[in-house]
Image (cartoon, rainbow, N blue to C red; front, side, top):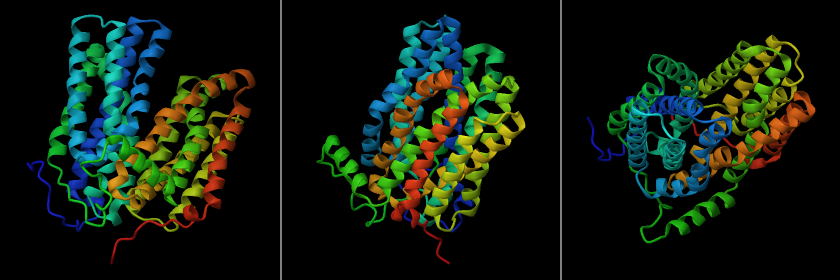
Length: 421
């Protein structure tokens, strides 16, 4: 097994999806993602057996606060330190935390304060883990393979969302939350030896030119990273487009879909079908970039797929039949998978690797800190006006992001690097 020593700077001869080093990292990342999902299911189940609905919401939302507050600082840490070490430390801490709560749940009924404390600590560790994951790919493979790695990563995220719920449900059926927490901790533990076996390459001199200096303060490096992002002709627009998309679509898909299903009377099986179709479409979109490794006119393709997906989401609230909603959900998922993979790939291949942790932290802050603000607004709006106008309005907001991308010359002309022949 390899140690934490840095491997020589050797470009991989194989494409990323056939590179054993990349696949070991991807397997470790997937195990962590599935562990995340199982943990959240176990936490919610433990809370609903102990407290009322209001306290349940408090427990489930507690982890979002440290993520939002600490995410930018996590980006600085990822850029200052070896991101693989940060990921290793994060997974080790999560493993110990979750196995400890598993023991506590097995021995006694956990108090509300304990569940909130676990959610807060888990969220704080996530604020370190997520930017480090974003900063690691340039140290695993060559620049021409970063788009493929981004597609593989998106595919792993979809797999985690698909595989996590049944694994968590089976664990809780067999032994309750204690067993589910144990399974989650075991998945985090599984990632550790895989991460230890991953070889990383040092940044090339031209990539490391902006690396943070040892004498700089964390605050100065954070300001430097935000300044770099704001002044970059492509990264700033990409982050803005992604933020508008998240604000327009995330509440619609996560909250609005549940309320639309209730409004139409499709039942739990109908909701499951729609969610499954969306997930399958998103996975197919991610797989496209993972296999192809490169798409022509990436910026323009990203903007067009975002526009198509936004129009589909706007129309979904007006569909009366379950089958048509399921088909449209698959189309929206496919568009979202292509858009998300290309957006992530362009960020990965454009950003200076020395700034990538901080850039990732800003991107993720829009997802975990800003986009969830739309949840109560979408719920209240559907309660007041019904699903159709709210879906139309949210889809229209996302369309504005797509139109901005189409009219932004740097975005429209952005290309992914091709593998040298």
